[in-house]
Length: 161
Ligand SMILES: [Zn+2]
Image: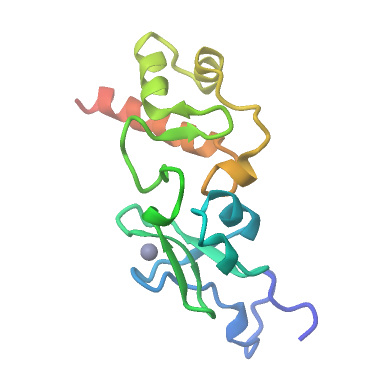
């Protein structure tokens, strides 16, 4: 089994371990996330349940599940986190840059004042550069994709009324 478990492994009979775990509630494919992210963002009392590996997040905006561990049957919903989850909560008070605490509303305000590109938004809001995305952003990765997706959304609203 050496060398297995990687994206490059597509050999037949490679074992169920290599399948991407699906969300136990909605069935969407999970995305790997570090246990360190969970330890930092889950409410006190839940952190003790976190084991060393094999956590995934549910990317479906409609689904209440944020994190899950397939083999242990653990599910952590939005209520289990101390922060709001940007891809599950469209509110203007939700951060898109967690390191600097810049919310969707602040980004929209900057956009309405004329900031149009990613660089202009970053300059106007002070977003990015926090280097703590792995712990502070519930997605466990850089906040830039969240900001860029929201910019596209704002542009779409203008173009299509
Ligand atoms: Zn789900």
